[in-house]
Amino acid sequence: METLNAAELLAALGHASRLALFRLLVEAGSAGLTPSVLGERLGMPAATLSFHLAHLSRVGLIEGRRESRFIHYAAAYTKMDDLLAFLTHNCCQGTKGTTCLPKTTACDTMEKRRALLPPLPDETA
Image 1 (cartoon, rainbow, N blue to C red):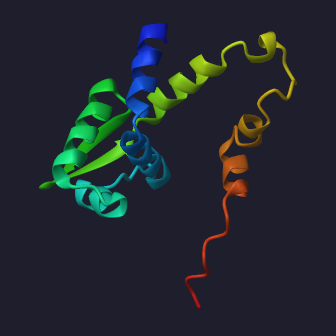
Image 2 (cartoon, rainbow, N blue to C red):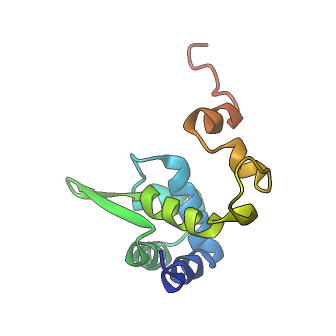
C-alpha cells in the first residue's frame, strides 16, 4: 500500500459518522447490514447515510452486495488488513517477539479475538 492510498483511507475514517458506520460493519461480519438497519442503529437520515456509504465504498473500505432488491454492505476486510499492515510495518524496528503493540498481539488471530469478546447471552433459556 502506498502512502497516498493509506492517507485516503484514513481520511475517510476521519469523520465520526463514517468511523461509526465502518465499525458497525466490521462488527456485523461478512453478512453485512442493509442501509435501513445501519440508519436505524446509527440514528442517521437516509441521505446522510447514503453519502457516507458512497464515500467508504469509493475508497474501498466497504463493499455492497445486492440480494434481490436489497443491498447488504460489509467491511472490506482485505483492505482493512492492508491498512493495518501498512500502519504497523516494521513496528519496533522489525524485531520479532516485542510487545510494542500488546492490544494488537492480543487479538492477532481469530481465536484470540473471540476469546476477548463477552459471552453471548444464552438463547436457550
